[in-house]
Length: 359
Image (cartoon, one colour):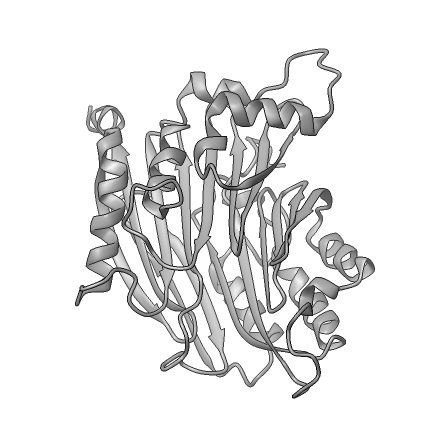
């Protein structure tokens, strides 16, 4: 923990694999067969642990002491907060996946701007160090590499690194990933994520109550929700909906309150239906009423039908989801990452927060 507070902003790592053995059973189970010992070794290197687990026919989801882990047959997504050493998991995961006959096809790493950068351990205190670490950790055949810091008008920045065996052209679209980071949460709403003194219920039972009271359960009503409450405060949940995952993490402490919402969808749906990505963004932001929001969308191919400028369409769609909640778009940018796709990044600020900063 940082001396001045807990670091809510997460680091996110996504590794995509292919199978080396032709006709050897393919990727029916793949990474889901990773031994418990290998997962424990990877998480020990990161300095976190599993506190809850769930799975369906498509993937496994783990709530961690510091955020979440998702395992698909050919994809691993590891997201951790605080002062974890996320990138230390890469060598462990590559060695363990190789023993299953898997070969790394692409790597993507992303994070926001830390609230307490001085507390981060090597290599995470500096993005240049993170890039050098990843360049040395991933195999040389991932020759299509790019890193960038995507700016905004405020203090927030979005850091992205990608490495791939190909530039991604002509490949089938991957999951679209939406990452929402929220700071300066409404105090009343944030207070729901504190445990009552003397509450003897399990962390799962308290987490379920927080899910219901906060409205998080309605972000995607179709999801199987696995929630966990931390003592004395804090909350994490993973949602499973077919091949789609969603995750929410909350650090409610006043002065450095933070919440994140992330989801993966098969296609970026401009829809207000229960399963629509835009509807889920709107519901997630409404559950916390933050003063500052940043949204990153990573996609491949066309994400909205009948559009010639995909990035502009994503910006407009995200704005339509968030601005009715009293937040105004302050900046928007986009960049292409070979093998990973296009990443858009937007920041939004509440009108009251803007007035305070201007006074």
